[in-house]
Image 1: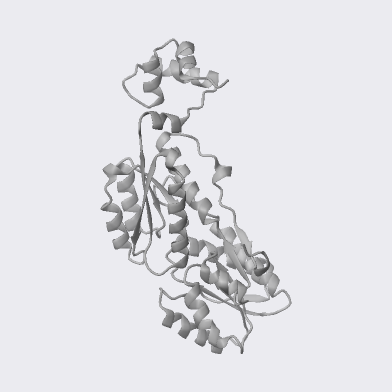
Image 2 (image 1 turned 60 degrees about the vertical axis):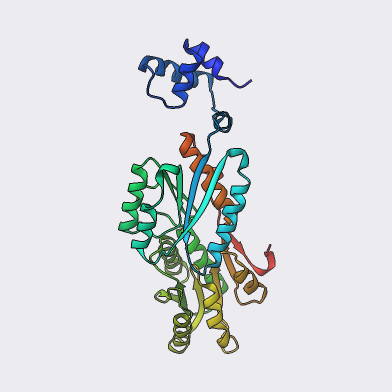
Length: 341
């Protein structure tokens, strides 16, 4: 039978109200009694049922997700996953909202974060690039006692509490290994595209990709990253120029959002060049591209797992509970046309 607060009170020789104050982090308890309660908790192996405690106190969590605004199929799927996960958290009494911000403007991001009503929030999940302005805004949020998790793209130099997402260096390595194996017997260049290299996930993916090609697939040369900043004309012009400038072009690695623009730009050249294409994130666009054989492989992170993990971690931070790292590890998956789900 699991130990209860009554067992702790008996073991520590204190009242139930004292046990309750210690478990809830109240400061109006004599240090000696705090030690007694904590020792009883350790001795009995007591694990607090925070859901039941919150339900009894009629506590509601208030969480905010801040995502990139603009046309982005991956962000759309993430938003849907967050709403679905939030709807499933009724018993955990969580209110979840989503706000959107122009992530290409660090000042706009910082302004959005500093304007959040922190008195009403318990936690914030941020899918934004790390900049000095963002780091300052996160420090402001933390100083207000609100928990912060980095979401999808890490914020390692900030005061964020946790990162929810895949190991993006490994994701880049995976892309390099896939392209290298697809082109094992060929020599040539690989074009690398990204919407922006400001985001940490793109930076880490690029580093992982280069590491694998340089160490294992020296028959292939990765070209400098092309950033197109949500500009379809820019990516179309860049692809046209690259196909002319690099007749040995063998593959394209699309490191993030913007797959729709990249594929639109590539289609006019489909008959004259046969390129291996590896992209990230399973969206309606990349799903159809797999079916149409326009993309050879998609590297995926489960957006449902991302959303649920962020909510679990934020709740754990609010409750001072342990985070189960194995449960929150977001796996890298490889989707081909043959195993498309």
